Image (cartoon, rainbow, N blue to C red; front, side, top):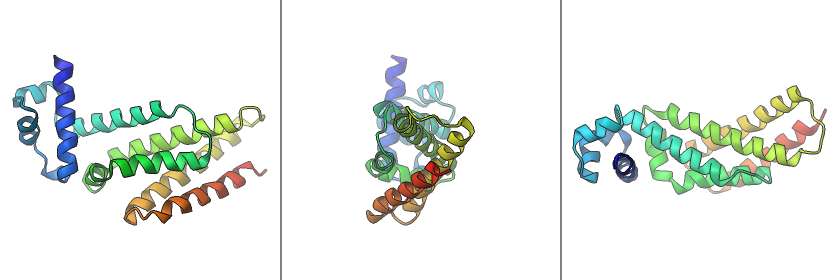
Length: 178
């Protein structure tokens, strides 16, 4: 029963997050929406920021599980950008809140997973110096992360997805050189 209550709290929070900014969601709003009392909420979560972090962690883990292998850098962009578009209102409400660092932390985790999965697949048969590999992975990951943040800051224009793919192709060529 406890897990069902936790899932109901998360579902209510996500529903409310699509409707209004994070700063305008209260514990009372969540408990009213899912039909539980305040004590039940506090049994599962210390506060709304903890709930938000758990929801973002769950979403991140689901995305990573859905894409264990990445075949190209273009797919890295597609995975990251698609996730943001699918959850646009909720992400914007978190991104433009005081809790932005939670979103940024998990976006970086998604970027790291995507780039590492692609790199390990693309260069599985090529001998690669570990220090150089690590540097190249971070370089490409930072570019993907930066492209996502820039895209969000510019209002998520569709043409930015193609631009991000082009930037990552440049990064890939640079990473593969000496």
